[in-house]
Image (cartoon, rainbow, N blue to C red):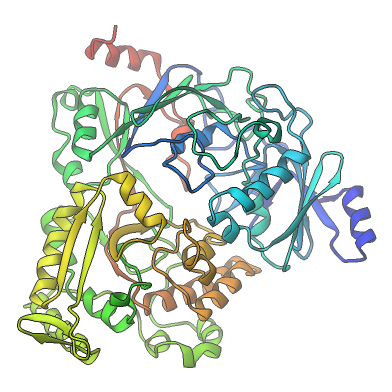
Length: 604
């Protein structure tokens, strides 16, 4: 680490012990894997050829190229047109290397972070990226951007210009180890491009960016195509070497998964990550696969798999009681679902941080108990002395026994059977709710669950809507139950506030779909964010996990520790796969392979 005079002088002027260490990268804990003179990440081919295209697919539609606001349905691919202050490596839990920022200065007490911008960083119109652009971007996102930004960046007190090419973010509280890295991921937008347009408008006019791609073609609701920027200012930086190899990236949109699958078979797009186990087991027996033109491959996935589950919106009266939420979990037959519908492919999820060391396991450790003890009178006793596990139906008459237990739990919670219907003993109101579905493939999972609920006298109604309506209802928390997944990073941080924080529960557009508003959860999130070591982070995350699990906001479903990839055999891939990413940005088009596929499809 070396010290920069500007930072030291600033610290002395402020009369505070905030001297900052300047570096090319910042690691959440420890030191970066790659040294200051590294030439490229280990998981890329630095000599990968440029050219060709990669076509992917998306479900639903889009009507906007502005991904920074709540209004409209944005095309997510456009993020590749914007550069950020730094780049996260894909083979470390959380380390950020400078991109727009040449140097990153983090205060010793983590009360601020400064970024020194590269002189040659520029937008696609040739305009240099200035400190004023960084400040304008941050302030605009906080004022006019998706409301989730205000939760995500809530610990930032102010941002100021502190040098000719230096910008500093000051924090409300010191000790948040993740916040400097989060701010390094800020995508910088051009202030001058918005002099004659409103940032808050839904628009199909591309926003000027600085990234490796720019928008080339758009057909609303059908496709978005990007083209590689040939004179991209950062193409030779070590963080980008071997990446962004395709001349064109294209995303085709489909209204349903069946149409998308048929289009893949016909060669209308190239790559799909398969999330439907039935399709993976039975859907790829078609001529092109048999001829070796299509590859199906399971790639090891070391990313924490998070929580996929039936999500219950605790804002709604029907799900306000955790005992009712808990009782409903006994009606889900994972064992049957996995065996009959998924060909035994999945593992039952038992944590919000599944497939990682962050997941709680067994009973709490001494360190966890010490952390949880101050909140004992606010938490279920089970948090302190039981290992969480979702209800299992394995064994003789497992489902029947579970439904008997659920019946008793519901009666104890004040919901009785009257004329064959589950009703509230005091008000007579029936226990009824809607299960919101976006993908038709989920019906085969939801319908058996609904039948089990009906055996309990519960009126659960599946409701399938299109992807755009689903997204709109989720943004405004207009749902009762749905099936959803919270992915997790190897180093959780500020996103926890967005998903589980009390402020986010009141903020439309946030990811707090469960409506979690609990001072204990808020306090534990604060502790996670202020962790001083990896061991401390693990302990605190496991404690948070226990509290969330025993609050029964979800009915856990399943996860898998591989990426199931199917792709037309047009591509080359690096020898080493990134540990925490699928790594599509490191692939390239292989000319010989592509020629073979193109000839078979009659493209030539």
